[in-house]
Amino acid sequence: MGVGALAVALALVSAGSVQAAPIVTVQHGVTYSLQATTAVVGPGSDNIASPCPGDIYPLSGGFFNGGGHNEVFMTANIPVDSAVINPAFDGWSASWRGNPAMAYALQTLAICDEKKPKYRQRVISVKSHTRKSVTVRCTSRQHVYGGGIGSPSLVPGAILASSYPIDSRKDRDRKPDDGWRLSADNENPSGKLSLTAIAICGKAKPAYVSKESKIFTVGHGTQDAECPAGKPAVIGGGQKLSGGYGDTVLSISFAPMPDYDSWVATADRFSANRQTIRTFAVCVGGALE
Image 1: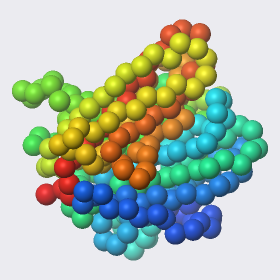
Image 2 (image 1 turned 45 degrees about the vertical axis):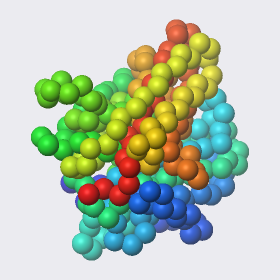
Image 3 (image 1 turned 60 degrees about the horizontal axis):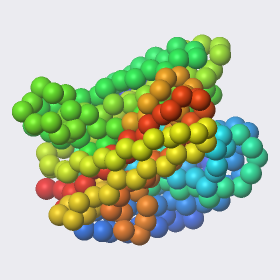
Image 4 (image 1 turned 90 degrees about the horizontal axis):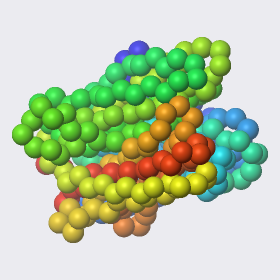
């Protein structure tokens, strides 16, 4: 399935929910479109999409929820297309799985710009009860802005783990600007799961910052990474989680409003072994050139 077909399918999944208009903010020339709602989550899966306003394009996006440990998990976080005619990415969609039937605050964030980036993709197959990782690389002379992974439908079993920028070590620098690495668990006992991984790339040169913390007990662990003073606008972010299948999974990956100058990630730890969470922020000084 191509990128356009995947995006259309995801957009159609989102079309069934009625939502208020997104909150659109422009900071340092970058556009942030926040779709917020309060919904009863679980048991089961659903998603929420946030559009980029006008004729601009998604650079990355994220998801926030008000749940606690073992309550809400991310199952997809990916750019979407809202139009069947002349398909092009024009928003961001996040899918989740909830356990208890409770009302939570839910938010999907699309980070957008007038400069159209390149969308690189790979399709992976994840075996039942395993974790699979994939790296999607940018072409030479391009730098990664963000990335995402998901399925064209709310396929049961997918749980997101790591999603972060990487250094290929094939160029002279040691900046994590060459691609995006993504990991997901397949908890479906009945078979394989097909997921599409995307890296979003362009010619602008962001700053990449990261921060790591340890998760010592079973439960929630949160870490943020702040943009530097010279490049205060976050255009992407992610997290690298240690451990294997079922050890630590992703609950929140998001740029908090109103400043949009950092990235926050929250992981749920289920293993008794000590785990780490490293959060990344991809930052620029203004609109992309």
